[in-house]
Amino acid sequence: MARLLRELLQGDEFWVQVVGQATTASIAIAKIRALAPDVAIIDLALENGTGFDVIRALGEDDDSRPVVVVLSNFATQRYRKEAKRLGADYFFDKSTEVLKLLETICAISRGANRKASPE
Image 1: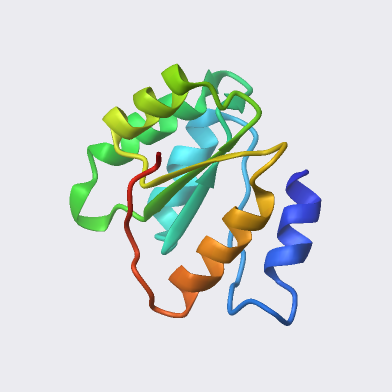
Image 2 (image 1 turned 30 degrees about the horizontal axis):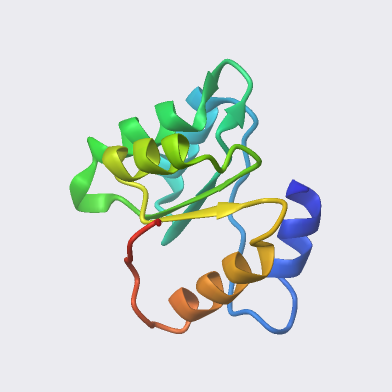
């Protein structure tokens, strides 16, 4: 899924440059802090931690925090609420909302509303 998403985002339709990718929470946190992307797409299922760990850590970086987008197969109401509580700006279900994710990333990349409710 990560490879396909990267290919879609770097296609001609979007004004997006993918600058990093990580499989563990600690690497994701370090890369996001070092690379300072405008948007961070975070999966809840990571090796050696969870996406919640990443969102929590980014919440500590309020000044430089990117738009936080969660993309997960675990799109339950409980997880959506927890992601929002920790500071996620958007939450999309991998199974049914990939098109909405792409539309949102496209809008953000073109300078539209950067932050919204993840619900």
